[in-house]
Amino acid sequence: MNVLSWTTGGLLLVAMACSGNKAASAAEGENASDSAASSAALAAAVKSDTLVFETVEYNDSTPYKVKVVDFSSDEEPAPYTIETVADKFEYKTLHAVGGPAAAVEFVNNWLTLDAAGMKTSELKTVGDVSKAYADLVADANVVDVYSVLEQRGTSEADDNEDMPEMPFASANEFSASITVMWQQKGVLTLWDSGYDYSAGAAHGMPWGAAKTFDLKNLRILQFDDIFVASAKKALLKMVVAELKKEYADAWDMANSSETIDFPGSEPSLVGEGVRFDYGAYEIGAYALGMPSVVLPYEKVKQYLTPEVKELLGMK
Figure 1: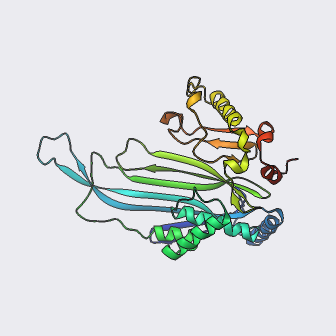
Figure 2 (figure 1 turned 180 degrees about the vertical axis):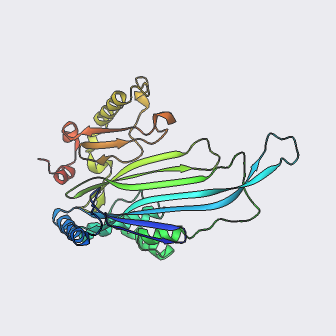
C-alpha cells in the first residue's frame, strides 16, 4: 500500500490510494508497478463514471487539566486532586483524486463542508454545494479536507486555573468516519458515521447515515428523488415488517408499528436495494443500537422514480 504520512504539531494525516472502497496494495520497492496500477485505476474511473479516492486520517489528542473532586468528603470546600485528561479527536474522510471532473469537484466540495462541521443535510444540488463551499472558503480560508483538518489541529488546550470539576477523570472523545458504502457507474453512496462522548456523560452517542450522490446529474438523492409520491404507505409497511423480522430478538415491535415512521435520514442506494438507517434512540432504546433495513430492488421497483431506474440501469 502506498502510504504518505506527515506530522505537523498535533496533526497526523495518512493518504492511501483507493479504488472504490478497496485500498490498493503494493509491496515495498514496487513503486513502478504501483504507479502503473494507480494510473490504470484513474483511467478506468473516468471511463466508467466512478470515482477513485484517497483516504485521509486525522488524529489529535490535546491534554488539559481537571479537578477530580471528592464529593463524598464532608470538608468545605471538598478536596480535589488535579489530573490531566485529553480532548481526543479522530477523523477519517475521503478525497476524490480521479473520475469525471465535474463529479470529482462536486463530491470533494461536499466532503470539505462535512469535514469542516458544516450542516450538509439541506444541500441537494451541485449549486447548493458550490455556494456553501464558496462561502466556507471565503470565511475560513480552506480549500479541501486537508486544509480543514490542518486548521482543526491548531487548537491548543486552555491551560488556566478555571479547570472543570469532575467526579472522575474523563476525556472528551469525538470520532468520525466517511467511507465508500457502494459505488457503480453514475452512483456513489457514502457512509458517514461517528461517536461523540462528552466528559462525565453516562455514555457516548453514536451516529450513522448514508448519502447517495447521483454523479450523472450532480445531485444528492433524497426520498422524493428515489420514490414516487404515492409509495410512502406501502414502503413504510415494508420497512416496519423488515424491522420486526430482523430485530425481533432485540425488541418486540409488534405493538409499536403505528408509531414508527421513516428514519430522519434519507434512504440510500446500495448494491442489494434501498437502505433505511435509523439513529440511536430514534425508534427504540439505546441498547437497540442503530437499526437498518434494506428493501431489495425487485420488491420496490414499482415504486422507484423513472430517473432512479434509469440511473440503476433498470428496464
